[in-house]
Image (cartoon, rainbow, N blue to C red):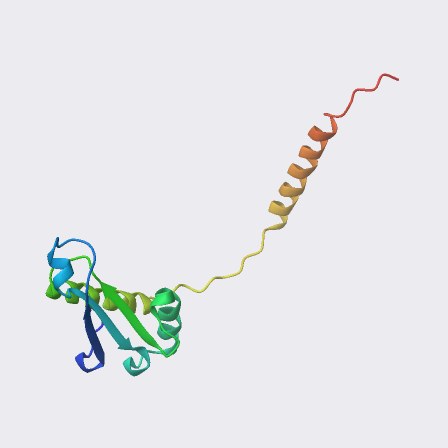
Length: 133
């Protein structure tokens, strides 16, 4: 189930865009910049930490997540794209990784490794200069 973004936490501005649109790009502000205060979302600590790493430079030091969408020619499409990106990021933050279980190599595996190393050493030793005594 995707995360529900509360409308009152979203702050959107429209900027002059680059990309598709021809001459229209110079006249109309179609790029959508969406800002969300992550602290006010009330995320659990594990999700907040993961969101911070996933967002990278999209997260400001004051805890705002800033996403800019400018792929489309219309405001509505860019607005929908920006919201979808934020929801996708938050959904990824809720996915927990399985904890890593430390394992030790078995005694037989250690012995096999040492034997292989000794064998390589013998091969390399045989590559030296030939001495006639």
